Amino acid sequence: MDNDKRRTPRSSVAKGTRGQLKSTIPVEILNLSEAGLLLEVCSTLRPGSTYDLSASFGGVPFSGLVRVTRCHAGGFAADDRGGRLLIYRAGGEFVGLSEPQKLGLRLALSKKLASGASLKRLS
Image (cartoon, rainbow, N blue to C red; front, side):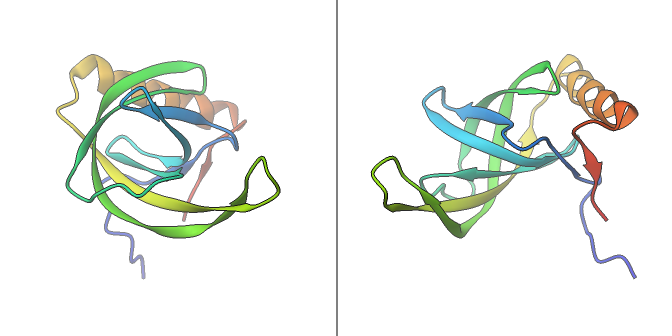
């Protein structure tokens, strides 16, 4: 039985796919769909808040508004001083996307899925 309640299935993206929220907060994007995404960030994000996201998915540039749906501690990463940083995982949904923005997401998803290179369908 499929317990995934998402409107559209998510696809994992190539390791190291990065973007920025509010042009100042770096994020790593873990998976993506036409409706939303999962990202890692070094600071907590308040659920319900919205941010401008700029990223490139499979060479396709994207800019759009994301509403944070959840955020929780997701693990640790090494910092540049030999210590550890707490990393947060945040889920978000795209809001108010124009048809060209939606088309760009579809293009990025289909391009990668067709090539089989960096995106893998999650089950």
